[in-house]
Length: 194
Image (cartoon, rainbow, N blue to C red; front, side, top):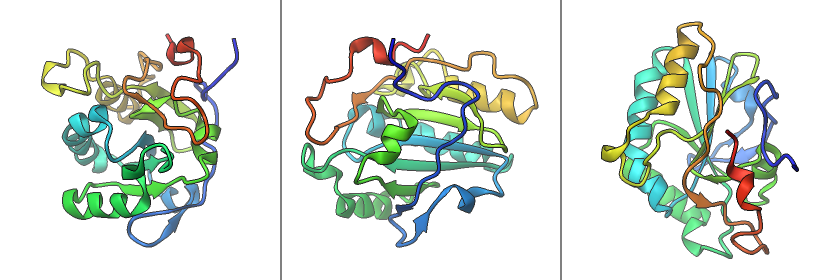
């Protein structure tokens, strides 16, 4: 089967993307972080908006352990106008999320990482090798009904110096809105990581 996404042990691809704070960021800007969580997100997806506060709580909980979070919106504004940069700035102003929010208009970063859904989380160690990929929980649309908190568990193990017990889960969310492609161009099995 064709590989659509990064595999455990792969290096984090670098990027140079504009953020809602007016700066441009790449991997070197997060060099001080012991662990880096790169997650693909957007402005409108109910799986993203439903779980935003849980993502916030996770980012805040692990900040003292040297974990940095970076959100990247790669959705095509041609497919979904609400995902444009102006709406990103507005969203960050309103919610004050504890992460840098980057715009990947070319979608090159999403392709390099193999972003499959919004949200899709990638956890990297200090050497920026992939430790975990997949979902934050098993019910991001209605987190109060979640029975597993996979991202939190993976980060707890990582910061404790333990191997991640379940390094892959299937991301749950909306398809990334690829420019010029049908919403379901990826085969369904692309998101079957386990």
